[in-house]
Image 1 (cartoon, rainbow, N blue to C red):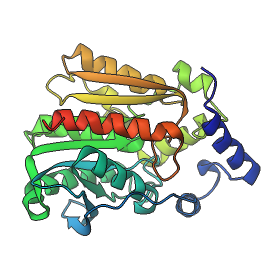
Image 2: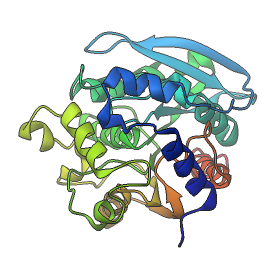
Image 3: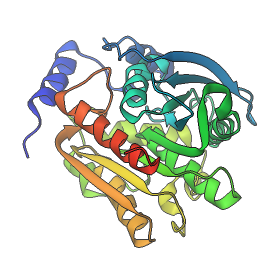
Length: 309
């Protein structure tokens, strides 16, 4: 379908402002640029507290968002997007607040280490450490460790998928659901969505190549399923999944291909493509009308997984 009018307006406003692509500036400049965007505030939640998870590279800063609901509440780890290079509490606050209230769950935001200063497996290790912390410490913030999910957008979707894989492989925390929002799952730049949406839709072909170059150190990393989930030989035994994709997004096809592989492996998987939409539309701080629809869909699937629908 045609590009959504609100998404088109966002892209036109960005082009008119002359905002450079993230691969055209330093990582530090890209981070400052993203945090300076005019984010809308998210809804009120009952409590926000800071915490830290011990990990192999040092403590991982966390932010715990608790909605106004009687507990103990289910818990969902949120892993932000940004190509493993950018992304912060500032750019994810509204989304975490919105998802906490809509899902009736405690959202644990993990501020994992960023590339290229910290290459794979730093972000993945931090994400898994945050998951372990959420499971082990749920009672301290009114959470229910038996109802745990992982969720993330873009690079965060990559990390959420990888966390689910490792939890299965290592007999880690039992994860009831994985929410993968336009996830990065592969390094195949020849997929049609990369060619159709190469430039002009926010996330570009060149920026994704740059992100992968920042994150991975070489071919060994690219073969590791915890870095590239599509490389996993077996996807059976993973938690049920929701995969959301956007029509005008280079990552569309790899997200949908991963959903199909999950289904083929016997994993209950819901796949929804948001036609007319662009990458990053899920961000509640920069909403278009369909952002709320997508957040409600993700929250609804979480509620079902948690037995609270």
